[in-house]
Image (tube, rainbow, N blue to C red; front, side, top):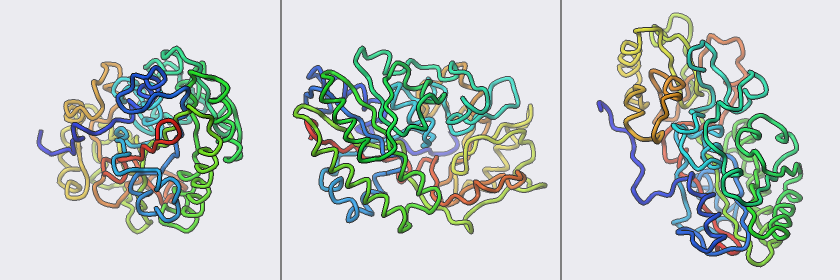
Length: 371
């Protein structure tokens, strides 16, 4: 390879193993967790280990419950669609095929949203290629989340067979998860909270507004711990961390930009671009982007990414979903296609998707029987 991609330490815990290890703990055979009667995995969307450590004083309960070793590595790209699918299938994106926020449908010029496109872009459920753990572990499986996610395509693609409980109030949601775990021995409960991610995108994780939400989440964690029945194990984790990218750090790609020469389609997201080249133009696109951007971003050819193993073993059906060239910032920048009329995405402050530790290392906090 002509560039060095960050490699995960051999001892690093992968987000893909969290739910299988929790299930194993219910049989007393987990390598990670103590035996438990039932288990809850709580995903705090957008809370990276770095974010939590930096704001530890505003999350005293979670911070005190966490040891230095309580961390895992999320997937690449470090984005919700890819990471939650990996958490809930136990495999990396190269197998399940959700390779980012937006990706090309092979053989077409369609670039679809892999988080919401099931409902807006006509994406078929089979686009998610791996069998979800809710169908393979042979256990009662519950999902406790906001009501708006009930019946969505992404929920159907990642949590088929799970009994969904839609509850908007966070305190009520965590109490419901504890109650389900208590009433259903041997069950797994998926508990989801998108609050930090939402305010992080809007205001940035370094904002006062984000800190206020973190304090609310920490209070909910305390509520959850108090509501647990004996024998219930909890893992608090996340799908990705977050970095703030203010507007003056945006890299805008406009009409006539040499970096767009030979680029047919752009997918991914601002901190992890999939560049789909015109036929025969991939090498030129790679050369131009490396010459211009390699000082501040990893610029990766598709075959280099496949060989790196970051996506796991890549299924043949997934290859063409991946850009001919991928661009993942090391620096605190974000790339935007400024030719688009919709400028709303440029208002986002908190960002994620790349390979930095701030985006990829997430908490793995144990409560209850797992503590």
